Each structure stands twice: as structure tokens, then as C-alpha cells.
Length: 135
Image (cartoon, rainbow, N blue to C red; front, side, top):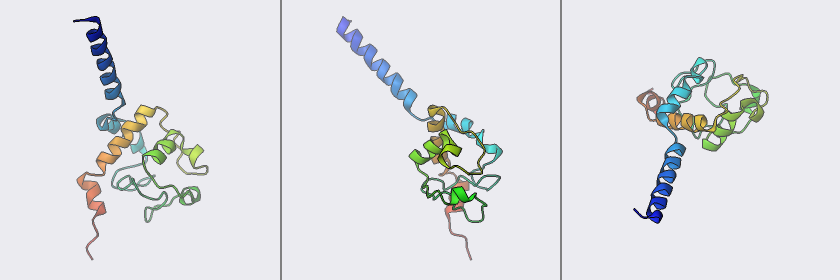
């Protein structure tokens, strides 16, 4: 193999390794989510509100959940960008929030957590919440 071919192969391998490391991992994100489960669940409200239906939802808007005034007035719509920012430092983003968790400081952990939450929204438990309730 020529020197140029070896250099190209090494470069491609390095690029592949970087891309693989940068791809969010929902399985790993589920492990990160274990930290959240002291207060949150996917389909039910606990100390914190449920996470099913989180993406695209206005902060402080789950019916019947007792949010802080700060969260209700935040006007945040949850998406990858706002969740990443919030999870990095919750009280810095929403001062006065009742969420007392310091956040998820590692960017990879946050990306994996968001991948898990997106995937979890496709589960039967979350899908059942999205269906209209029969009258």
C-alpha cells in the first residue's frame, strides 16, 4: 500500500471514529435518564412532570401539574436546542424554577439523553397519552 493510500485510509478511519462518537446513542441515553427518574417518569407526573410529549410542548403546560411561576412564565418551547441548554444548567436558564437538579454537564450525555427521550415518545405508553380520551 502506498504512503498516500495509507494516509487516506487513516484519515477515513479517524473521520468514521469521530462520526460514530458524535452520533447520539439512545441506549446510552436511557442510562443517563436513570438520573432523572428520582423525579420524572415518561408517562406519569411525579415530583416533576411527565416526559411523554415533551418535544414541541410549551414549558409549564402539562395540565394539572403544579409548576413554578418561573417555569409557567418562561415561554420556552421544548426542542433539542432548548432542552440541551436547560439540561446543562436548569436554574441558570429558568431562575426560580422548582427543579433543584444541577443538570447534566456533559454534552455527550445530554445528546444521548435527548436521543432517548425522542425515541421514548414513540413507545406505546407515550402514544396512549397522545390519543384523545374517549368520552
